[in-house]
Image 1 (tube, rainbow, N blue to C red):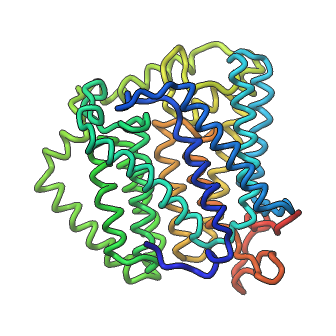
Image 2 (cartoon, helix red, strand yellow; image 1 turned 120 degrees about the vertical axis):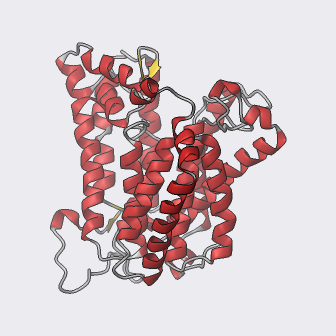
Length: 417
């Protein structure tokens, strides 16, 4: 699908396998009923086995333990500190310590893969291909058993019928695939026919999920990414003009249908309260906390409060890792965003901006920025896109463009062993 770059040929094929295993680990073990019932214990065994296999393969392919330090990975590693400190109290049970171990193994794998973070689009391609495979299972389930894939329990929204995936999950994967593929087309890294084969089915799946957050994140992320290319890319300017015109026409012709799709049959009151999320958020913020819980949280859990999902990354981090965790996650996102703004216009920068923008939008109604999740994988891809290119001879970052000052804190650090 994608025009190959020389950099991809220098990356072992095993790296793509490792990335696919990391994605499998973050698919989760809960969701809708599947055509063939899968015990949760079996799903957890598969996902955790995938993480263990990913770490082992990453270690094999990087036996010399060469890594490229970055602010993103350093802050993410520091997040382990409040996670472990709060989990040791066992307030969230022994599962909290297990989740800490999982996060540590997840981070170790990212560190091992960082050796190949060179500012190219190699990991973008790995990301797209893996999630296209996941979406393929969703489409296959919808064809085999439409009733199972569009259950009344979820209001007729699309779910995973072969693997238990919820509508927000499918919407997220589809939105990321669409956004990155569109940017590759604008950057002339893939042809339009190949891109249409990916984008059109993904767009259909996104519409069937009725996922507002994913749709909004896709639109905002693409607007920011394409905006970063407008001054330097004629293709981006043409696409932006075409997109604005189509959006205006759709708003006029299909306004009522779009409004109905957006509301999903909910009342105005239910929509205003974000499908009940606001009530959970208010209860979480009003709950009394000790000084330790305020600083370090209650320990890694299942991202719920009072038996109900929190569905907000910042409040989930506050609940489980305290204000220390919130500061570290915020620093992670801010540093990535600042580095992206300091980079000269390029396809890599645009893809990074899209992923950062998408995660920022989705963090309001989805949890995951403080634990091993697809959102951390999205940000890891953004970090790989913003890394300085490595010199083939030395493996060290090449000097930046002359005359462009980059603050010391925003520079990528050399590869270390």
